[in-house]
Length: 254
Image (cartoon, rainbow, N blue to C red):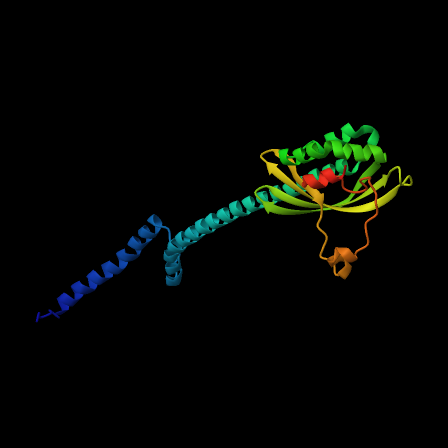
């Protein structure tokens, strides 16, 4: 332990030192205040929030980047799907147009200008379908000439079904106004036809054409041809003149 001198002289010296310290302290504080502007006191919670702001900003940037990436991929995928849909719809429309034009050419003919008819039904077809017309050319031309047949086709509507690999099956609802030597007054008959239209690169071809198979009949007479009434004997092609693929049938027409 140190002994403190409490004599009157010592006490007087200590009082003078304390008075001097109190006098110089405000001056130093004023100088410091002039040198450094007073800074507002920041609450502790605000400081913590400020410290947390930077990690949160990094997380927000990462999330934004991921969202942008996902949205970018989604947009790209949706764009591809939309383009594919547009292409598919465009192909279906084109197949319907090809089928409609071909049907009109096949249902419209005049015995006085058969070359135009055969040119129309062979144009824009596959080699196989073209060969079918070539095989029956003479037989069909004789029937049409002898019957003096004149016909005009009209398409009422189409229905397209994609079969894959650029193949489309087109059902055509059409009518044909026809007259011949045995029926001088024109008559209109309905036709339900099926065409196969194929896209090969930039080329469209009709590969098959004929009447649509009827639905199974419920009439017992239809199931037993012996009980059904005999068809009318009309040598003129009053409906679809598409050639049969059976050579025997084509020869029977003679």
